[in-house]
Length: 584
Image (cartoon, one colour):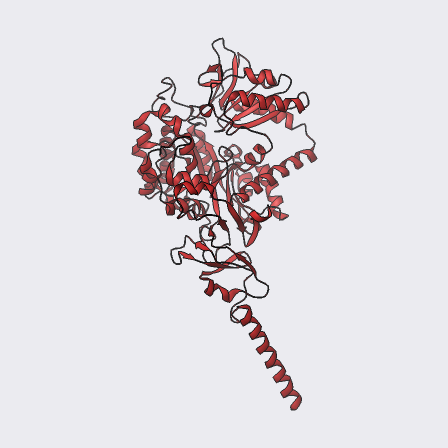
């Protein structure tokens, strides 16, 4: 009896000691300690039930609580990782709703031409690269834009520079430099010879080979014509050994991942990859080598009505604990871009009256792909920049919705860019439930040449009309179209709320600005919605994935001119710190 009493007293004493220890540590004995607590910050949740707080508790990959520091202290146990936010802003992780993931990785290994102020300086960069390149080795670069140079490039044909300077800079190496929009490239004479492009080469469907007055190619290939050159480049790359190809691919994926995480991006919506690329990325996810969440669209080029098995075999939902989802087809290219005057317009360009742009992929082919998507549960995504491309796409969507008797909002089909709209088509996005997948940064960087291309009336009525679309009830998302622009949610957020034109003191039709709350919604909850993850992410709500971005400045309150100085301090995906500014 005495032995049992002593044992009971000993057990009670242990419980008292444990309770005292937990109390000292701050953890409520009735609440399981969290794995991670972020506290002493300003938390903006994008959850209407608890709009803000000071602290977040995370267990595993999931948020368990948001509230005041004192309320969340009960989740702090001896093993809890505690991060002092030091008053900084914590928001749902940024969702890059329109980017090109492998393209980003590739450009990080090439000549970076974005922001280089002249064609002459680009030619110098090509020459420097040629000095160290082996004879015959390809020199690649991307990001040039003829409208953004501060001096004339010299000889100009149809608004583009010619390849004279890069012919001189690299006579023994094929050179291909991609336009910032991705809808044009310039190649030197060596590259054109390898591609078999000469004065007698006709324009391919959906593309243009720019030629001078004597009929000679200038090196500029627009939209569908790029495939002629890309085929020659692909042939060269195919000569690599399997080991070399895998190493190059893995390096590019790692570079893209690190770049995204360093910019606070927790989810990346990749606008189109081949089955082979999806398979390779899936293997990386399987080995735990993918800290970023990827929502990958199957390239429309892969889709065939007579072979749906390959497509359906690649339908993947939340693989690797939510790190890979494939349930969409895109970005199917209806037209080109404004910068290359290949956006498909209802009326000719003001600065090129004989040109109304290009229908890159025939609408009959786009409809065929969409039919496959609707039959097999795939979201459809169409690239449409010009007003005619948007109208044709909306018409096609509407026809399919009616024919198949589906509720459009359950499909969440999307139009990528939606940059230039006929006023009569603006309400159709909200009415039809079509997502306007837009990129805030484009309005600010493209604005200087929008007016020359479209004129005042068309630009005011339909160019980058975010607020007009919002008011129709349309879901508007945000992104950067990386590598067309740098993958900076901060820059795109800033443009969304200011419309400040790059290099000027003016705002581009400021009535179309978004509020800061709207702009953050485009980058968080709306991004989650368009990829069917609105129940898992997009807001800092208990039960959702712990995808969190911590910023050095409060972008919801600082003056407009302070937003661009904001840095990412932490990027957290699934409760793991995958980027820290202090450790970079």
